[in-house]
Image: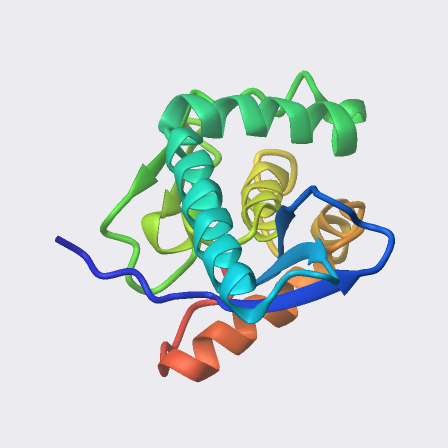
Length: 177
């Protein structure tokens, strides 16, 4: 059974909050909002409860090939709608044999493969990698026109930086595509 590391937790206390407790992910961190009057023991109890709830919710949201195809269609509609006729992938799927890249596209047959290593990364990073590969269905090379398409995604630069950071931190040497 794979061990999951415990996320960094930021607890925010509020004098206006009376009874409710909530939590959300902010990047790699979990923010837990609690009433200011909670004792340290109550804080600890609620942090554990909220981490369990977040984990259960995230487990229900499986990242499947079908979900990836739906995501690809949404990204095409939003960022590549002027090329919708050309951006019709034959398949979009998660793969475990992408060791030198985050994703790949074969424009000739319209197949897109996304590395399983990014399945647990933030949605905006997955969207960037997927849009990058979808753009190859319009422009196979990494020309200026290709990057114009990719840079329609508002978080493109941020996602590239995130992936470069992961590569540096893990010692991965990855191809540009």
